[in-house]
Length: 495
Ligand SMILES: Cc1cc2nc3c(=O)[nH]c(=O)nc-3n(C[C@H](O)[C@H](O)[C@H](O)COP(=O)(O)OP(=O)(O)OC[C@H]3O[C@@H](n4cnc5c(N)ncnc54)[C@H](O)[C@@H]3O)c2cc1C
Image (cartoon, rainbow, N blue to C red):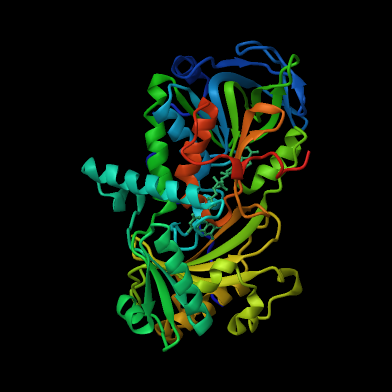
């Protein structure tokens, strides 16, 4: 197999040196200016241990010395209404919603940068096709889909092109079945979706071939077509959200702290409420709320923060294969094989099991997903497996993704993956998996000012705007547009 290159986030030209953003930590001479822009920012020689603290009751008081490992570091303190931990699509869109819909000040903290987590690997499907009417997820998915569509329309109304800004394409989605059973399942899904008010149509094999000529179909094939399903490019979308958030820097309402892991929380001695988030470099006081949106790291972070709640979110690794500037086939829609919906085990696909994957990867599943993105790349997916926090590329999995795609697209059988060389990239991300299949969104029992927003697994891009609206409503004490109850922390995490 040819050498495999792992996807790296592109350079981020929108990060202008003059932006008032605390990322990475600015030189001392800029501090005075920045303090006027987003609250108290007082460099002090801090002293705190890594574990829970009873700190001062308000911002602006010296804490002492922070230890990172054995090394004392000079840290600074700031005060915001809301501190968000995690700058993936979930954290950044929550910040956006709070900035747009309230007058609260917001800080976003990340141990690295946006798109370094699952968000940067996402295929970008903004889909209803694989959501089930009446399920706990349905209303949130529907609301989020509406919000994405409105955002794309707003961008268009402002004279901009959503395709350029977000990588937005309203291609529609195709869930593709290859067997009589899968086609029957898709017919039932189309009926169910239509009854729930979502436009959906069943395509016979002949109709499917007209829609997507690159597909291999036989008389048993069929598909569910949802013409209003969309896709976006996660990197462009994140850049757009960040750019929008930074408009609030000049009002002193927004700041970013990147390359700055959260290491501890400062608890009030009086009522145990969280008063501040301690990062490796700063103390960020939060007057109103802390939102933990740390993706697959949320479970381990909550354990490290020692607040007595065991969040069951864990990493579910995914690989995508990207063939750049690929014109052998061009797809008109986003595609997914019907079996993906039930996350079938790898052994169900004879061609994939022939890849000879080890027993350790028994939980591995690979199903065909395929789309042509706005840059003309063919994006093929995807794998799901539990291998902890490992993000190494696995050559046999890439091979299996390729072989599965070849089963659906005959033209790909004419090619050897090794021949593609430099033009192939691999994207790897850790989806934040929750065992019950629902994200956890809500306040932590016993800590009313700490909110979780995590566990979106393979739908975090789709569900981001709905989640952001929900969290902002919770923080502001508003009634939600969507029922909060199915996503509550209580009862789904151990204490
Ligand atoms: C291969 C693949 C394909 C996918 N395709 C789709 C798709 O088509 N459609 C869809 O809707 N979804 C898709 N997803 C899922 C989607 O990408 C995720 O659900 C979503 O990105 C999760 O966003 P997040 O913000 O919760 O997590 P992340 O993007 O992982 O962000 C979490 C952030 O928290 C930060 N963090 C962690 N610990 C700390 C700490 N201690 N201090 C500070 N910061 C910290 C991390 O650095 C990270 O930036 C896909 C995922 C994968 C892997």
